[in-house]
Structures are given as C-alpha cells and as structure tokens.
Image 1 (cartoon, rainbow over the protein chains, first blue to last red):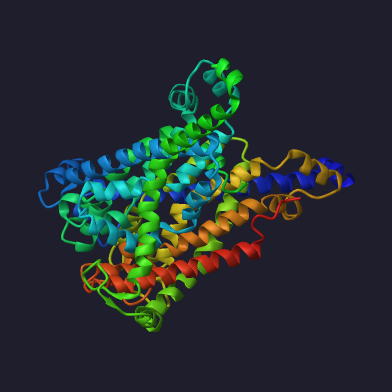
Image 2: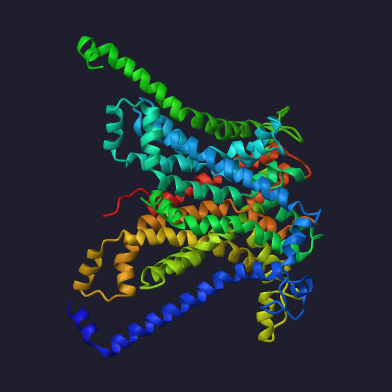
Length: 289
Length: 313
C-alpha cells in the first residue's frame, strides 16, 4: 500500500512511467509499420514496371504506377488467372456453405437431442481433431484417387466439408443457447427440425458468421490439398496457380505480383467486414478454457 | 397429446426415445458418416497400405511386412526431415509465443487506437503462405541484385546476401522463420488478448494493495500465471502447426529444378515420396503413420509436462 501511494506522488516515477509509455507506443508503431511492409511490397511490385522490380538500384517507391498490369494479367493466355479465381471462389463458397450446414446440424444434435450414445459419437468426432489434417493427405489422396476424383471440383470440395473444429464450436455454442426459446417453440408444436431452422438458426447469426469467415479464409488459402488433387491446369486454384508460376519462373514478375495482389482482395474484403466475428469466434471456440 | 400420457405412459416413452434417436441421426448422421469416410477410412487404409509394396497404385499388392518401416526409418532424408522440424520448431515456437504475448500485452494497455493496432497485427492472418512466400522470396529476401533486405544492408555498406541459398551461416532459416512469424503472430495475439480480458481486475487491485509494483512484478506474479491455460493451448497449437509446415518451405525453396537437399520438413518429404516421381504410396503411408505417432507422442508429452487440463486455482 505505501508503495503505490508513494509512486503516485513521486514526480520522477511519473516521468519514468510516461517515458515507458512513449517507448512502448513508439515500438508498437514501428512494429505495425513493419507488419504492413509486405502488403505494400505486393502492391508496389504489382503496379510497377518489370524494370522497376528488378532494377539494381532498388527503390522503396516505384518510378511510375502501371495500372494496365491488371488488364495484362487477365489478357495473358499463359496465365489462367480468371479460371483459377473462379475455381477458388466455387471451392471456398461451397466449402463454407457445406461446412456451416453439416457442422451446425451435427453440433445441434450433439448438444440438444438426448441419445444414449451421443457422448461416444462426440468423442469419435473430437478424436479426429487430434489427427493433424496434414498427416492424412497421403491416405486421403489414395482414397480420392480411387474414387476417380483427382482434378475434379468434387475431389477438391467434398473431403474438406467435415470439419470437426466447426462441429465442436457449434456444439459448445448450442450448449449455451437459452433453452427457453426452444421450449417455447416446442410448446407451439414445432419438432426438432423446425425448431432448429425457425428459432435456433435465426438467433445464432454471429456464430455462423464467425465459423463461416474462418472456414472461408481457410478454404481460400488452402494449398497442400489443392496442389495434390488439382493436378490439371483446369483444376488449379489461385494458390496453386501462383505457386506453379512462381516456381516455373517463365512469367513476368510484375504479373506474378499483381496476380498475388488480386488473389488477396476477396479475403481482405471478407476480413475487414467480418473481423469482429473472427475475433469473437476465436474467443468463443473454447480452445483455452 | 396429453391424453396419450394418461392412457399408457410407457410405450409412449419408448416411442419418444426411438423418435429422438432417429432425429439425432438425422442431425448428426451426414456429418459423422462424412467424417468417418474422409478421416477414419483414409487412416485405416494408410495403415494397411504401409505394410504393402504400392508403387503408382492405391491397391495393395505385395505384402512387405515391416519393410516400408525399416526403409523409411533408415532413410537419412527422412531422419533429416525430423531434424529440420526440430530446428524449425525450436526457432518458431518460442519466437511466436514471445512476440504474440508481448503484442497482446502492449495492445491491451493502449488507451486509443486499440482496434487499429489489433487489426494491423491480425491482418496477415488473411494472407496465404503462397502469397507471403512470393513476397519474401522475390521482394524482401531476393538474393543478388534487388530486394528490400539487401538494399537496407547496402545502406550500411554490406555486401548483398543470397538469403535462401546460403547454408553456412544458415541464412535461409531467417527467411523461413519470418514468413511464419508474420503470418501467425496476430492469431495468437488474439488468443492472448482474449485471455487477458478474462483476468479479474480485483487481482490487480489486491496486488497493488500488497505493494506489487506495476510492470515486471505484476506480470510475473499475476498476469502470466492467470494466462496459464491460454499459454498451454498456444504452445500446443504452435508445435502441432510447426509439424505440419509445408506451404512456405515448398514455395520458398523449390523451383523449376526441384528442391534443395536442406530444410526439408516431414510433409515436404512425404509429398515428394508419395506423389513425386516414384509415387511410392506404400513408403509414403509408412511415413504418414510414423509422423502421426511422433506428433501424438510429442503432443502427449508436452500436454503432460505443461499440465494441460489441470484446473487453475
């Protein structure tokens, strides 16, 4: 107790505290600038001329901006950018919609429908969280190729629809959902199915937004699975296209950078609008409870 | 339907129970079947396949017994991939942990622009490893003529460094480490921020009454212990994610000529073994099984050691 009163009346201590605060803020601003540099470089190189990117006397600002790079990218017959963007959009949208439906139904059933073996089923689902997805890519490839789904959208979408993580988040959320609302619905004669669609879903929009955003970002950025399954050029996602062009090095650098910049635009839009849901979803997922 | 209850409560109860079971499976069934088909079946298949010779085929043909396991465990490349993982996680786990915790503490105490700083540090989470690797390889750490890192070095009169190609000293680790640090720190910062917000203010008031000085003392005796559950979860996730590193290694190090012999983590090794030129799916499956076992052991040991599940006081 004496220490705290003393510090409040001590001018030297006050000055130290203020200096510490200023130092912390300066460090934070410097780090924030550092974190933004890669985004800036993406934009800088995407809009610069080829010679501006590879010049020996590299400068932080390009000498001129070339907005025509964007049109050049989509006109280049060697770079299937439009098709890859279409594939990525189809995959991300289908994966998000499918995951939300499947995982939310399962989460609700586990949380609310009494069934003798519900716990066993829940642990069987939870157990797959312990199996890192990346360890199963060889056997999953084996399965998908024996189904004849290599280089098809089916093969890229269907195996990714069953997210134990999403199911777990929904179950935890529905366990905390106020029972009174559902009881009222059942008094009104609604069964599980209609209670779910008419009462529970409309009142759970934030958790759907949170899980949907996380799943969408994951699906858009996924690389290993699309690389393994999307072997034909027609099945390339944006990430596989970028990686292939990067490794082939036959493409112009400014085109590669403008393609990369274009590829993150959809995500930045989703991200900026739905960020608070991601944060809420992460906080709610219960991984640290 | 109250009259039915009055007449015969027992059959009604079992019918309701059967009804519930049916509805349970209507809700959970599609998900459970899909999960079984695309997780449990591949795992089982992989275990079976790992005991067979399977080149260019997914149907087991010649029984090989433990041959695949013997081959993969004696393969110096597989063993070096495990070493690569060990080095990688020894760098990336403590670095991400420290930076994300520091950022969370700093951002949490901001009086203004808190949302702005949180967004800036969280924003890279929306970027893919492919895009980040492109920026790192072709712009920041570009080898010889151009690039941000060598330009900055040039200001101090230093010679340009071939970052990704230099193995002595291993400059390539700096490139690989910073990509992941940039991409994932913001996510863990959010986890720590969530944990910080759950610490009751009265703990700090009590500490102040007991004469604890704000700063290091408060952090050491109040904040850090209160964050224990979050810290354990973050450390576990970091190690598991480090094991699965693939995207940045593949995109930073491989090119039209192939993949250099150094810094080949387990997944990159498996990718080239099972799906590369040889298409040795039997050997690849054995590798996947070994990797799954290693991850399981490391996770259990780490969880035990850090006391996961122990309740906080």
